[in-house]
Length: 394
Ligand code: NZQ
Ligand code: ZN
Image (cartoon, rainbow, N blue to C red; front, side):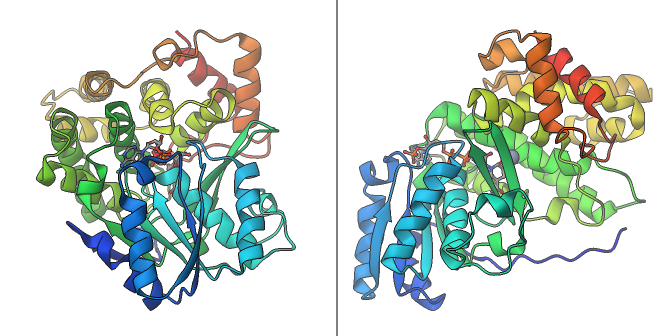
């Protein structure tokens, strides 16, 4: 097992009606002037925002609201948020929504605390982030895991780049997680969430092997089996509290670091998917299910034994032959994605078959124009990325 630091400081408040505690939680974590970030309006329509502002008022907390965050959230919108939050004098950023809202809130927190620096410089690693404002979360969709993660992902529409920033300043102070708040999530978004939750663990499970890592593997395998079991239940019965709770909790644990401790992170499929979202504005979870089968097919010979273990422990594949088992595990994963309505190639994703030129441009951007290799299970150069995109280009 590799040495690691496990830092997950977020106070998780999980259960029915727990959003009623938002006012107290904001106070507890130092908020007096609260900048509330939300998305396209689902939280206004559901009445959740009113409940939260009532709780803030009960605590005599000042607040203003900033809506309009869109899925694949934009850098330009986050910059507008920074401007408003600075004018307001915000000392706390509260996200009410999903990954896109939370990531925008994180960006606004960084920008407000560093008003003289353009936030994109943090994402481009041109300036190191050394301070930020506290962020709290009321989660409304189980998917990105941003409510406990150290990451925030923004899209720069001018350059077509979708980039993540990993820093402990991205860890929210608290996350309110009431499974009931997710009952109204549209079915397709639920499925995207299931794919994303699975991929946060799979992208860690298939990483450079640094020796045995039994406990971490067991946690990862248990989480995947749980989501594969309960995800389809949630799709059939969106108000099944127990199944929804399982998926919601897995959605956080899968991305707080726990399922990959003791080995490096790979995250190749995320990087491949981000190019698709940056260019075609496709939903994140759908970009991942589109790429995983092609990535797996391309890299399986690096460590077929690992793929066979995955097949046996996740999908109950009982083939003795390693190659056959590895292939069966890949096929079962792809079948599962299809069964929940997720795409597994470019045409299913709705972007059509792409030209060699587009694939070349996406691959070039994915490897940061030759400045990096992607992942570590098999470190991918541009040629590898081109080949993987070509496998999905049907
Ligand atoms: O905007 P509203 O009106 O709220 O509607 C949203 C949006 O249209 C809707 N929705 C959310 N909760 C709802 C609801 N509709 C009805 N009832 C509810 N309770 O769902 C749609 C999708 O929302 P979004 O926030 O985009 O979804 P998700 O949580 O999947 O977030 C995706 C974003 O997170 C990034 C992705 O790349 C993508 O940009 N990620 C962030 C990560 C992180 N920070 O750790 C890690 C992930 O790998 C991911 O990259
Ligand atoms: Zn993800």
